[in-house]
Length: 110
Image (cartoon, rainbow, N blue to C red; front, side, top):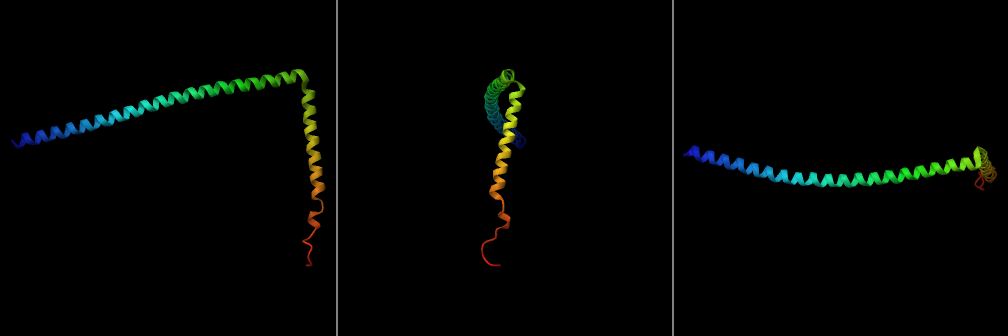
């Protein structure tokens, strides 16, 4: 009789454990499904971004090739020289503006 009661309690405990595991399994399965759906959406958005970026890079490369074809390397070199000239001009103006600052004191007696 006591053995039957203990056996019944053990079976009941196992049944409760199995039910709890089934509930946890169902929750995890739902989470996995939600993650899979979210991953699919992310994959689609990344694919769209790659397509858009690839098209933009292709267009920029095409425009650069067209510019080289239209104006040649001479125009590019001329633009480089103009940029160097403008930088030298800015540096010269900056040097003129800051000339003598190290020799000027605060104006009071030392």
